[in-house]
Length: 146
Image (tube, rainbow, N blue to C red):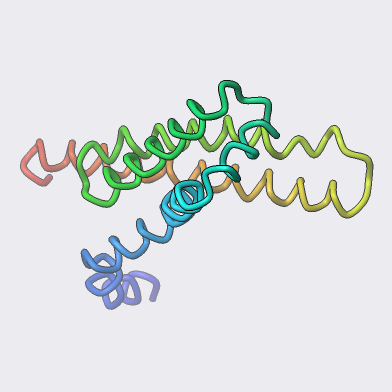
C-alpha cells in the first residue's frame, strides 16, 4: 500500500516547484534576517555587540553577505551542496553562541532557549540533508542517471 501511495504522490511532490518552495522555506530565515539587518543596520550592530562579535560592522556585513549568497546558491542549484554545508555549519556555530540554555536558571527563558537550540539544530540537519541529497543527485547524473 505504501508503494502505491508513493507512486501516486511522487510526481507532484518531487516536482521542481515543490522542491524550490521547500528550499525557499528552508532558506527563508537566511533571507529575512539579512534584509532586516540591511534596513536596520544599527540593530545589526547591536546584535553583533550582544554576541561579543567585534568589529561589529565587519561581522554584520559578513553575516549579511554570507547568508544571502548561500541562500542564492541553494535556490539556484549552483554549488548547492557546498552552500547547504556552509549554512549547516554556520547554523550550528550560531546556535551554540546564541542559545546557551545550559547556562540559564530553570524557568521560561531557559525553556525558550532550549527550544531555540533544538529547532536550530534541526535546521542545521535539514541543510546537511540538502547537501547530501544534492551530492547523491550529482553522482547519479554523473553515472548516467542510474
